[in-house]
Amino acid sequence: MAYKTINPYTNEVEHEYPQATAAEVEKALTAAHRLYLRWRGGGELAERKQVITRLGELLRNRKHELGTLITHDMGKLIGEAEGEVELCASFCDYYVQRADQFLAPTPLYTESGNAYVLHQATGVLMAVEPWNFPFYQIARVFIPNFLAGNPMILKDASNCPTSAQAFADLVKEAGAPDGSLTNLFIDYDQVGTIIADKRVQGVCLTGSERGGQAVATEAAKSLKKSTMELGGNDAFIVLPDADIDKLTAVIPAARLYNAGQVCTSSKRFVVPDNLYDEFLDRAKRIFSSVKMGDPMDSHTTLAPLNSKKAKEKLQKQVDLAVEHGAKVVYGDQPVDDLEGQFFMPTILTEIDRDNPVFDQEMFGPVMAVYKYHDVAEAIALANDSSYGLGSTVFGTDIKQARQVAAQIETGMTWINSGWASLPELPFGGVKHSGYGRELAEQGFKSFVNDHLVYEPEA
Ligand code: NAP
Image 1 (cartoon, rainbow, N blue to C red):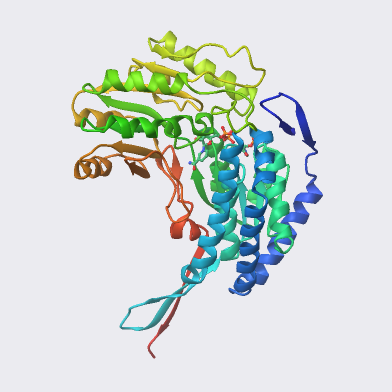
Image 2 (tube, protein in one colour):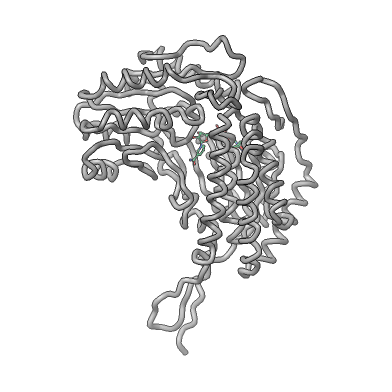
């Protein structure tokens, strides 16, 4: 399996890495399991907190250097890459502050004796992560599990190997013992072998529905607990009383951040008939004013897609949508003046229920716009999806916005804001967007053994 950094702006192969051998896999498992045995009783939390504090410092001090690696791996704007590194540092702060509280035993009330629940490590975890946030995705699972005492083996996306290795090296430099986080360049069969290994107790994956199904199947075969953070087709419901200026300010990040390659990007805009024409005008203005170019240049506002494969896949989806009756309101033109994997921002309307892309995630700068007449119709449209990751409700009457939010079948809803991710907010979805949560206390405890201890009265 080829692990390569192919810069999507220049198309040049910048780095290539050899596949890990079976002996390297065994070495990683041995080191990780040894650490688990050392930590499982709850010891060395203070030392682990020191490592994470140091990791936060390193991330902040080197945000430009690390951001540059991310940009070269998968093309995102350097400002966004630096923001990602800073967000990871904020995870360090949050979990160091909360670890004692999250791991403190929970006393249970019983009249029959003494009972409490210990929150303990469970063992080695296998993490499979994607390319769209090369640092954030690793940080989201590594930091809490390291503090909880679960060592981790990482298989990152084959197109961002330099960032993955840099993150693992940084963890080591911060003082983490050998085996805490081992990044391995492995193929899918090796992932299966690791999951089946007796020393491994859990599997977390962020990625596509297809990748999630494959890895969750491996986990199920050997009865390993798993969390799955998968794709989304998030609806952005504009309510009839929405302030169009405030809405306009939110659209660029909601749809175009990371060149539209965010699981929680707003992908379907559901707009009332009283605002529909104005909304399309504003969206066209936003989409036509982007500046494509070198993602390392701070004046660039739209980055290339992460790979040639991603660009081809998105173009196929847009073609399919149009073949089945979708109307191109803006975009869908080749970007000939740049060599990189650029995709012209595109606005589509009239995607009917029977259009094959209606229920597909379009991972790039493509906005689908739907018109509705009454709010019940908008809620039904938002819920008419096999995905259930995030959603947005935008309106002036906050009470109505909250009522609408409560009726949407997703794991997360943002009111009067685009998507957001903070360490204290649990992240995850329902339906085909996966199961389990990352971040916050829920994420911290995803792979913690809630171990009951009970002493009945004699
Ligand atoms: P992907 O193809 O599923 O890849 C994700 C990771 O899974 C990569 O490391 C990939 O390795 C690995 N993988 C895929 N199939 C595998 C298999 N059969 N066995 C073992 N490993 C396997 O996903 P992607 O298309 O690159 O990533 C984008 C997707 O992630 C989008 O759908 C997006 O919405 C979703 N996402 C979800 C969240 C969330 O929190 N819910 C966050 C970010 C992204 P290779 O690179 O070697 O194929």
